[in-house]
Length: 431
Image (tube, rainbow, N blue to C red):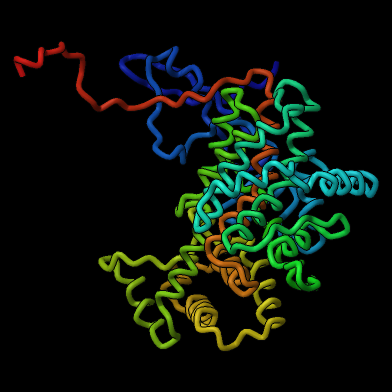
């Protein structure tokens, strides 16, 4: 006799409802409430969906208590130490690490799609020169569906594959074009012989009047930034992509929706907010003042770049990013930059202060990535576009996983209605 599957029993209004318990491969069990409304005329209230699993996924797993992040089961620390961003892209998209032949083929397919349709260059002229690069990216990525008609059929596996490759390949080009446009500099075309991260750095910083020399330390740091941000479970932007995709929207529109969501300061703008805080502090001698504000619950001041909503321990990505930050600052010899001096001293104090240690407010990935990007020469307006480039493969992998579901349903969250009950219309002359 087979073991009876575990259930949770809900007693309500004199009736008992049995809800199945589902067990994941890793992580806490889940109560299946799909029949709750049909059986009990009830649904759940969970603002922010912080206690609700909206999908099944085999891509990424986070254990916030342990400080663990797994891509397809592989710890992020091992991937950051031994892999590279394009190999991680393959892993996230297809579920397994590639063979040498598979990786070479994937690398070539990405490389051969880095250019954008030449007519797309004219789009940029429609934006003000001081437009935020994220505003430009939302528009241009969404408009890709007007150019690549041969990859819009979401029910065709090959169309989905081609659209996925195109977006991973072209997002760095589009982001770099947005950056160049904001500077009033000419666009720089991609080069097939360069790495994914190296190509992006060249498109951002090269100028036609002189040769561009790619520094391998900066190239490695950029590759790590992209790899560490590639996916992060069902965060706000990923959930947005899935929700848009559930309606049958084309893949370019879905990714554009993810970029729009990522733009929010509570999501992708965290490293920008962190750097702006460091500039507000200004000098090392003012750090104690801001430390005191952070400890004062009534001050309203929040120390950006420390702690994490999911990780209740050290952010595993931050450990890797700190190594890159140290390497980049050492390479560039940045010792007199006031902002970076504040960052290093604030990091030192926070790692030793009993208040921060007891509350596990460790520097997170946003703290270190902002330092690295600032040192490389990127303005804060480019921090979130770089995040969008990095997260594109995660969005695509999640979108493809969702589209392949046998019983795909359009997303339709419920609500707790607190407005007026039914009432009759009153003629304007009687009000």
